[in-house]
Length: 215
Image 1: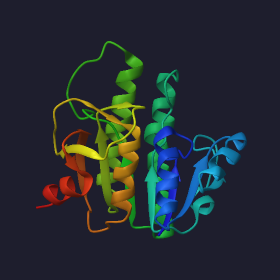
Image 2: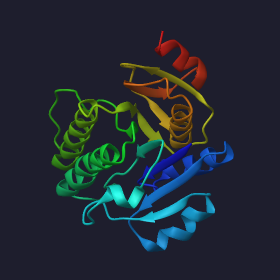
Image 3: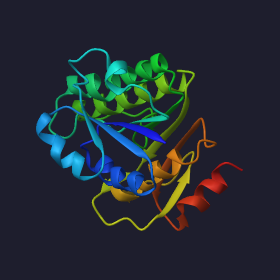
Image 4: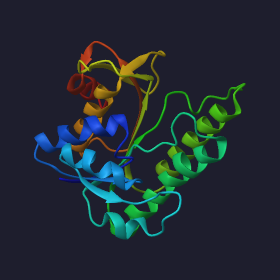
């Protein structure tokens, strides 16, 4: 399959590129900085230089694909405004690009608990949660075939391929490498459509977990 990943220099995406390449897929990654190109190419992904916040016509930049993945985020240290311009508006921009190009499948990397009605003392984190929730809602309402992944706290531990997944799961953590493996699994299983789920580390293999969730 031809896969386009937005936010391709992020840690999850950098795990994902070689996974997809090893399975025979074509991988193109959207990055904002030219200096990231060489590092991306070493993972087997072809770099697409595009600034989600400032460049126009993402549809032309990405071209045709079988599936798009949104793994971008403003990241730690960014202010309230960028939570909206990257995490929300960037996701919306990819939705429109996919629709323009006739790409039917969209995988979103979101976060656990973003739909919860709760107050946050940190206004930047509150903006992040709100931006993620709005992005997810836009995808659900887009008419595209989607999978919205809502992981628990992300760690840099080595992945072990064992997860707990469901519409709602207990708070916990999960290695970024395992999140990448989940995305790779979803890429290869187009029958898993219109799913929104939370996920943490657990006891089931990825294939076992998704066999159960779709019953």
